[in-house]
Image (cartoon, rainbow, N blue to C red; front, side, top):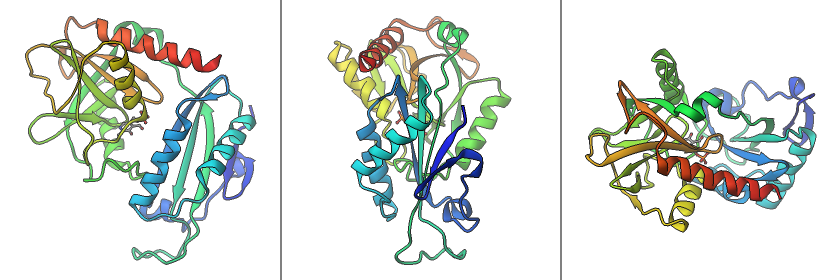
Length: 283
Ligand SMILES: Cc1ncc(COP(=O)(O)O)c(C=O)c1O
């Protein structure tokens, strides 16, 4: 498929879609982004993703380049031009182009880029055995609630993940609580309850996290939103969530196995309930 991207007012073949070398996204990582999943042409939680984009823009004083309705329409058009069966739409907004200076110019025109790629699907092996994760001290900045394109810490984290033959890395605070992953939120099952860190400056409010908590509550799984540690007695399962993963069981953490080292019953059932919602969305 010839991929088509939206860049600053035009749809162009991906290889011709360019931004200026003095774009502040390129020079300062001065921008924010979203990733949205689309199943058979139906977007999952498009509005909540666009609302989070607006919150991220507001948090760093970037003017939203379009209204939410206009953005929905553009996202839809971008998908129509790249109609994968299962797709992920990437939206990036940067502060725009200006001669390089830390000081922000007034009245800048934000850069808006939208690309579409095929949504990666987990391998049969990952589904059967679950994900291997490692833990790392949190080296990120103090505004992780903003979906910033400044992802250097996560890139470094993922390099360590790859070096250690794992799939994801979870950030630990100074007291050893699990905050979230490089690109996922994380959960544990402790004494039968689904536990996840509260939303604060150390955690991105994942749209999939919200969905997982909503579905868990609706299906009689007790939810506890509090800081948690891997060393807690009663911990039987771990899992992670993101737009590109739904909920995935995490069966290995550093050199230890979680529970019996296989995807556990709560993770399996929560994942299935989420896939059922995706399926319902298609119909
Ligand atoms: C740091 C971080 N936490 C959590 C998530 C999951 O967010 P969502 O469920 O909205 O994809 C992401 C996704 O990119 C992320 O980068």
